[in-house]
Every structure is written in structure tokens, then in C-alpha cells.
Amino acid sequence: MRQTRRPDGRLIVREGDRPDAWYWLVTGVRPTFCIVGYLWGGDALKLVGEMAHGKPAALIAQRLLIRAERPPWTPPVWSPETFEPPIWK
Figure 1: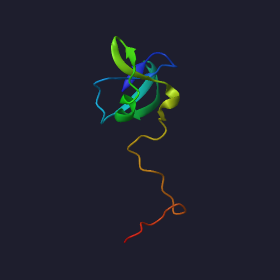
Figure 2: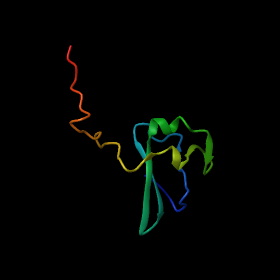
Figure 3: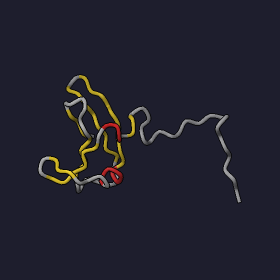
Figure 4: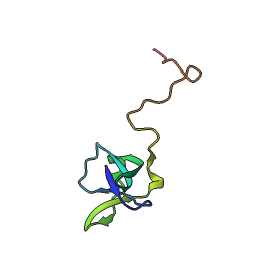
């Protein structure tokens, strides 16, 4: 999880961060925070090309993040109307 005081802040993922982890952006200051969104490390690391605090990093705009309404471990919404049984061969 990465946090910034700036409401328009970017998610910073640095070269050397784990590619197999989720990176979340949280904005605000205690006691009020906003969970903005997240991105998979492997995808974020493909965007490395800028500098953050003197180190190579990806500075990812909020519009590029997966919105926080649905965490990555949440299964897709299931309904009987949209369910398609698997085809067995």
C-alpha cells in the first residue's frame, strides 16, 4: 500500500518492487483516507521510466488504476442469468 497526502497523487512503484504483489494507492491524512485503486505489480513495473526520490519508478496516474470498488481477490459477480456451464470434452 502506498499513501500520499495529495488528493491527485500518483501510485509510485519502484524498480525492484515485487512483481507478484498488488499495489494500492491511498490518499488523505489521518483520520480520513480514500482508497483510490490498485494495480498488479507485474503490470506496474512495465511502466517504470521516471524517477521518484532519485530511483527509477513508475508514477501511475489514478485514472490508470483499477478502481477500489472490487478488490482483486473478489470473485466475479455471479447470477443465474449470466452463468454458462463449462463445456466438457
